[in-house]
Amino acid sequence: MRFIDLTHELKNDTQVYPGDPKFILINSKDTNKDYSLLEIGGNLHTGTHIDAPYHYIANGKKVKNLLLENLIGKSNVFDISHINPNKEINIEYIPTLNKTREKKYSTTNDLIKGLEKIIILKTSWCNNWGDENYFTENPYISKEVAKIFVENNISGVAIDSPSVDSYGENKIHKIFLKNNIWIVENLTNMNKIYEGIYKVFFIPLNIDAEASFIRAFIEIQ
Ligand SMILES: [Zn+2]
Image 1 (tube, rainbow, N blue to C red):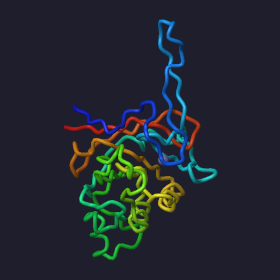
Image 2 (cartoon, rainbow, N blue to C red; image 1 turned 45 degrees about the horizontal axis):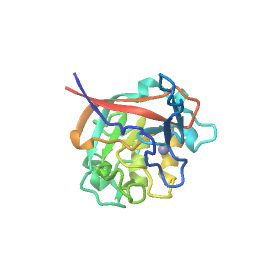
Image 3 (spheres, rainbow, N blue to C red; image 1 turned 60 degrees about the vertical axis):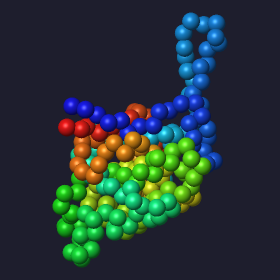
Image 4 (cartoon, rainbow, N blue to C red; image 1 turned 135 degrees about the vertical axis):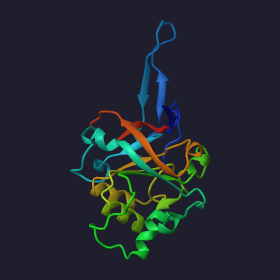
């Protein structure tokens, strides 16, 4: 069994979404002591993280309420690396969903075959991590695609970009979170995986909060 780590390293001054509190990870002990004790500060949306419904929904679930059963399991990785910056991920980019258009997909009784409960979108935008435009020009999910995921009762959606929304927007977050679908953002190392079905592990902290850093990895046979 082999794993591929999809997680950014958290370190002092890791870049954060513009305007969010800075991430701090510093040794808080004076240098005369013979041990280390690090102090952490900043915000929970730093690096590879999960958004729980409470992020936008007042009575929504917090991270501590998310079921491990829904955070570990089979996932579809859809490769949409050919997408340009600032572009909407519509169903043309995901042939599996595009079939639904031909079928005049309409009701929740007509679920898409082969769609797993966890969806991972590989945009390869993670290659721009550290660049000035990383947080502002990312590809983002269209309303239509978000609704198809909702109708198919997925548990969660993950992306290798800073957000499922375009910069400054939140409507796609709200569609997912109000339907109890968690969101994982800032995956990395996507060049190591290809389109297909993988067992994935998204492991958050047991925390009374709207978001959490996670360790994200997939199993390779
Ligand atoms: Zn977030």
